[in-house]
Length: 305
Image (tube, rainbow, N blue to C red; front, side, top):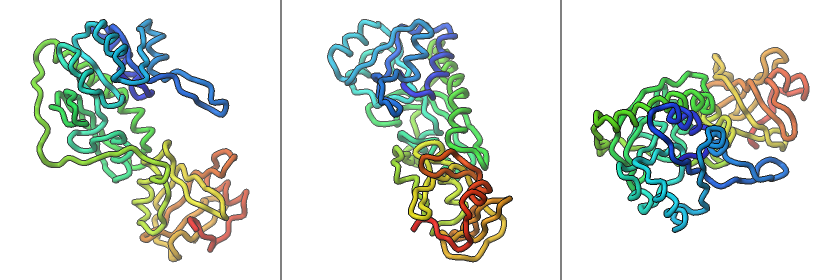
């Protein structure tokens, strides 16, 4: 059970294992692009390529869907990046349901563990397989694997690495359950943190914060929902940035350096932030130096006002 690209390597890895996949469950086709034409989710496309039937229920509690699940006669449900399963679904498989979660539980429970970890400036995260219960991300753990976070790595880049590591971990977990070598371990009663889904507003840059904090925000919201500010009354997306070595003087949000070779540096609550890749509405992405040369950026201009 899964929908986005993050779940595709897990499907492929399980398809290569000794555990037969009787069906895939994913979300319904959804409108995408400017034309809003219906497009299948990545997991459905992968299932079709593997010749595995895909179920796409509108509601997970639909009696017809529940009957279809029971007809699969599955021993185990495997879940990766999918909505919370209702209790009536969890009762169906003989051996229960397991989930692959992109954090070291109990930290970062929720829909956006990778983004939230990067935004928080973590240098390490990980993956956890665990038994599903009605309470979100709170079931007994089965296996965990630690993953380092690079200092300039974006959430999208980290997710691309973690989805492959997670696929192997999930296959190892399925093997361990089949052999009886894995014993579930209750999660610690303390230390749990939340990772709620990001909104567009979570990407708004607050220039009254420190340069390092803003840098992490930009990394953590790349590619979705994206970091942004305003400039000359227009939306300015900031795809990448770097903490500037010196701490330039200036008001928070003020452009303190605009160099045709090195780009734009903005003052923050502490230190400067060099904007290395930006994008204006309807325009392509450009490096900071291109922005300076193409738009005659002036020292003293303000962002975010």
